Image (cartoon, rainbow, N blue to C red):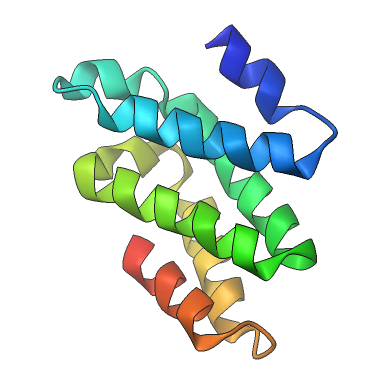
Length: 111
């Protein structure tokens, strides 16, 4: 967890996005939900990364959202600690008319 945590805090947005993708792929590889839930405390940080990246690079933000969607399909309870933040982020994405429809649709898929 330490390696992921340090990389999620990196100053370079590309490093944070790459870490988000690697982390979600890593968590999805677990067969046991209890193992996956050990990473649930990082989900709020992942949402913050998506918000930040969407502001500067919509394509990278959409790719990040897709990684979260894949994770959600495997472990829906992983969001239990930050449901309000998840709903807020998704609603803000859906309300933002400047984002492409594909990005807004991706936000709907998470919830």
